[in-house]
Each structure stands twice: as C-alpha cells, then as structure tokens.
Length: 554
Image (tube, rainbow, N blue to C red; front, side, top):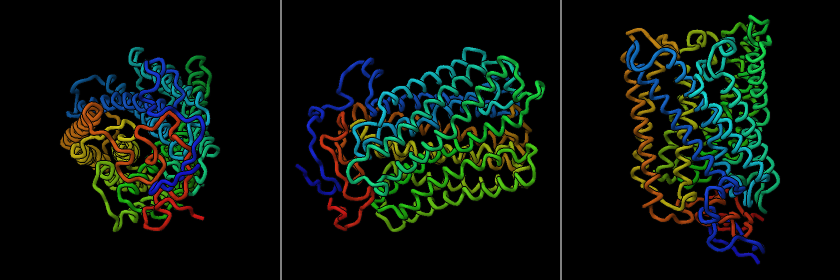
C-alpha cells in the first residue's frame, strides 16, 4: 500500500517491522549504558555533538586566555611557557577535536541516513567504534594538561617538536588515534550514500549537504593516513632518535612540512566543505527558493576536494622551494578559489528576489556569506608570492584562517544547529534571542579578527608573547571583541538549554523544508521513518509545479 503525502514529495510504503508507535531515540532504552553501546546513528550523533561542544568550550577558553594575555605588550596573566602551551592547545583542540569532527560526526551522523531515507548508516558498529576512537584520541590530547603541557604549536613543526620537552608523544598519538575516527566516519558515509538511498533518491536529488559530506569523506579517507604516518614517524624519532625530520640526526625538517601540509591543506576543506553544505540547506529552506545552480554547487564540492590536494606548497613559499614550484602552487591556489566563488555566486543568486525569512538560521547564513567572502578574498593575498613573503607568519594569516574556519565553519555549524534543533530535540528555541546571538557574534567576530588584518599588514608576528607598544590599541580592541564573541556563545547556550525545559513543542516541519528529514516525525522514530519513503522530487523544489505537491517526475 502506498499513501501520497501532499507537499512532502514522497510516497510512503509500509514495511512489516517498523518501530513501535511513539518510540524514538530519546524514549528508547534508558540509562547511560544503553547510550554507550547504542548503534543508533542519531544517538551517536548526539554524543558527538556533546563531545565536540565540550572540546569547543575548552578551546574557546584557551582563546580567551590568549587574548587576555595580549591585552598588554608584556606579561599580563601568564608566563611565556604557559602562553606557548595555551596557543598550542587552543589550536590542537579546535582543529582536531572540534572543527574536523563536529559537522560530520554530529550533524552528519544524525541527518545523513534520514536525508536519504535509510534506517541507519551502512556500518552501525563501525560508527560506534569511530566515536570511541574520537574519545580515546581526545583523552590522550587533553592528557597533556596534566603531563607537562605542549609548546610546539598545533602544527608540531620539527625540529622543535622532536627535541623539546613536554607531552609531544602523548598529544601526537592522540591526534593519530582521532585520525582513524575520521577515516572510519568517511568510509561509512560513502558506503551509506552509495548503497542505502531510498527509492527515488537519485544523485541529483541528494541535498547539497550530502554532496559536501561525500566530498569531505573522500578527502578524509585519502588525506588522513598521510598525517597519521607523519605523526607516527615523529613519535619514532622522539622515542628512538631515528633521523627522519631532525637535521641533527640526518633528517629533513622541510620534509615534515611537506607531509604535514599535504594532509592539512585538504584538512582545511574537511573543515569547510561540510559548512558549505549546511549553508546550502539554510539558504534554500529559509528563502523558500529552489537552489540556483544545483549541479554547479554539487560539482564544485567535488572540484574543491580534488584540487585541494594540489595546493599544500602555498604554506611553504618561504621554506626554500624552487621558483617553479612556488609559481605552480600559487597558480593552483588561485584555481581552487574558482569553485568556491561558484558557490558564493549561486547562494547570492538564490537569495535574489526570494522570500527571505530572517529566522535565526538565516541570520547566521547571511553572516557566513559576508565573513567567508572576506576570508576567501584575503586568501588570494597569501597566494601571491611577493605579498606572502611580507605577510607570512603575521597576524594577517591568523585573521584569514579564522575568517575561513570560524567565520565559515563555526557560523555555519551554529546556524545549522538552530536549524535542526527542533528536529533533534522536539523543542523550539526563542527566536528573538537566537537572532540577537547571531548579530552579537557577527559584531564580536569582526572586532576580534578584522583588527588582526591591520596588525598583520603592519608586521605584527603571530604567536609572539610580547609585542611593540605601537600595536597595543589594536590588540586591546581585538581582545574586547573576543569578550563579545564569548557573550554571544553564552546567549546561544542559554537559549538552547532553556528550550529543552520550557521551549514550545516543535512541529514536524517548522521551517517548511522539502528534504526528507522534515517529512518524518519530531523527534525521528528509531528507524527514522514508520514506512519506507519514496522520493518523487528534489529537496529544493519550492516552485508551484506539480513536483512540489508530491507528483512523480515521470
């Protein structure tokens, strides 16, 4: 038997072993042990969400300490050694424990199977193993707090990391283990998208978040082993004094940079590609508009993933590489900007003359467009050989990186968290507070990091504990901006936390979305759908044509 669902674009076919009425991942088997042993992708996604948010809070705490120390040109609250440890842990926690796993691990795990009409991911037990690997890596990384600290910076550059004291082996082993979590998650997602799509879910009916997640998964599988092997070699060098990277032992320090950035520049796209996918969802749903240039956005994600493997050398323009190599890497840096520009153009075109609803998710999406445009354009300065020589290792690089990573990934993540919060929890949040948090965060972010473009262009080096008196006013302004960002996140925390207790009950489709996650119950049942969905149109068909009311394309 099939039942047409008006407006949903699906037909639902009953299957004999659906979950009991009213059952979902919240009211299923109770107790901590049931969560720790679950193979339900939704519960695993929630545990990823809680874990990565804890990591983000800790990394943010170190960021606030850094900005407080830089309030004055000389010592403010900590010693030089503590300052080095703080910026190392801030970077390592934010990159390896928050930005890389947050969107795929939390939102990807929760929504990817639902968005293709599947009951779960392809390998549920492997999915749980990836979470345990993430926790294990996080414990080793954070264990450095009680094991002597770490002063190498999050890039672990040799020969300093191979000779300095501190918990280098512990942290690099933690990142090594967490890398396997990333690999297994990517493998699981690729197989799930290939094999478990519901009837009617063709490649060109996938939500763009899944195109971005798929591209990210390819990068995770191909690039992460390079970092894992590099860190393992560093561990061997420290433990057994084998000359691999340390010049004093006959090694090559620049070789470490090549290995590290061969992973870490594709890792930039592991961080930002899922954010691109989220923005496509936010803009389409909250503008009630069919996405402009669906295929262009989809294939640009694949193009970014592929070209991203070829540009690692632009991090090493001053490391002594040949002029020909530097020229090629500079060209490829400009080339990878083209598919990114395609996305921005198509998002803006989607918004043009659309029925924009200025909901909380859309506020974050619009902020993303401004901030990522600045981040992307300033990257072109760093891709120019002559300009990069002046700007290399200055606060200009810090600002650029944060405009891409925080102005991009984090704003997209927070916007998507508000977007899907009703579906995850079954509760609505306070819209007014949500919009205020987005605006306050946007203001605080620009206060903090736009100032650093000016500092960098005037020659302020990054990672310096002391600085010239002439830079103090800009540093102070940047520090005040960091407090504004902290206030914005406290508003987000208060708003979402109070919604769990006193928020209005969320309807199944509060935003009027067309993709499959909005066509199931809130919260979703244990098997995601009471009956197997059959998709009959694309996820963004908001037009008045017959497809928008559930009719088949044929």
